[in-house]
Length: 305
Length: 327
Image 1 (cartoon, rainbow over the protein chains, first blue to last red):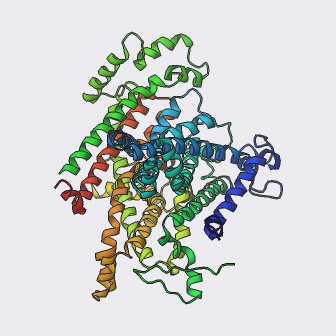
Image 2 (cartoon, rainbow over the protein chains, first blue to last red):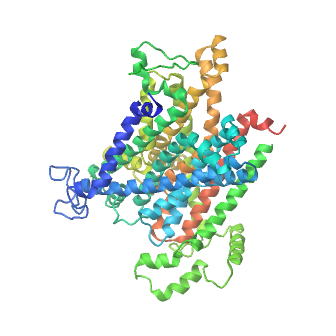
């Protein structure tokens, strides 16, 4: 069995990917599968969940399930765009810093450390609040522009340790050019780190965007899960006991975040095998009478099929 | 000492960068704040007022960018952050200095509690890895994935609307006069309980996961095996050998995660209408009070930098390797 299949056989990763797939489907089909138009006002004001409105309605009788379904796209698109742009910047800065070393490395790592230390959310709020219109894509790019530092830092450390490995030295001795060294020798060994950085950034981007919508910086007419919470908060959903208004949106955010974290766990376990053979396998280990002891890592080989 | 010196230089540089970013943001973004303000007010501001707004923002183009930058520093060094629009003519510095202590208190107490509890739970989970204790991990992931403000909404719904145990907003009983009396401090603790609880709940998971993974890694080190072989009691090996080393990366990541926690706390203050700097920032955003917004950002960033320096100092005290580096 090769490594890619191992990755998929991991229960956590599978669970994460299934949830992600579900939300992706919603994002693609949202407007067609939503039972109502999310902006359509009706007579059923603030009604609890019923057969007609599965998740109830808001203060003007708009269907909350439809808002949730239609809003999925906004959340995922921002997560994806921010994730991709931050990863690109992170890879550029991190790999360059790790590979060139010297003064270039010093200044690039100082730059990424600065971005790490400056609190991002206030910075994003400051930028987004001053833009003439802070739509989804703009917010995604702002998040990408401020959120690349963590990935860059991890990538730099990893590149630094790869740079002096024998296979890179051998390629260098063969007279390979630098860009080829980076692209062909170093980059493939960074895949897992890049992937985990990407997933982490998407998680952060989703949280940031929802937060921005919740405090009303992005246009409230663009549906996403944060917008629903914005309307709920501003119309005293809490005080009126309208739990169906704010619980589902938050649960969706948490579910999406959990799915991303689970995928990242899987990636972590590939990078650090010590985490792999213990982890959440507790039950299967116990069933087979293996008791993990401190100081030893039980390496469990699954029977090959 | 070299380690500390390097850090101090780094923070000085970061502070300079933050201040410079703060200076350039309104000037570099497409559509300056004046146009944005006019656009968002949608005709409620007379377009003839544009010029006076520009002067008010200090954006009148007569002076060169460099001159503006020098002036900006001059004002800043005198502690002048400009005047707030909404609370005109109160200086931004006054508003910020009134709200900052509340945030520092809230974040400080909640973060220390979360760090201690999280590291303890993580120690335990890492030590007992591969047993039932690992079942707690999914719960930790859940709390890590939940946005702070939503958890805030839920705690308000449960503890203040349904159960009525705690107030849902504010930071002390409005009937009281702020003073250093037992009664007033009790009121502050009572009002601050829910916000602090929410911050602890949502940030504890990160510490648990980090500590757990470090414990897993550290507990297979040779010195732990040796400690076991010496026949030391389990508790002593766990805390004295494994946890002691595993906690170091926690302290260094403390600095990096602080920005994130602070961001979350700011939103929390908005949810609870807690009179800290986050709530001030929120009001500034919703009233388009740009000087106040920028003042908030600056003060938040500088406070985080100071906190980071303290964390670095603690790290240098805890880890002797940083002190022997210069030899």
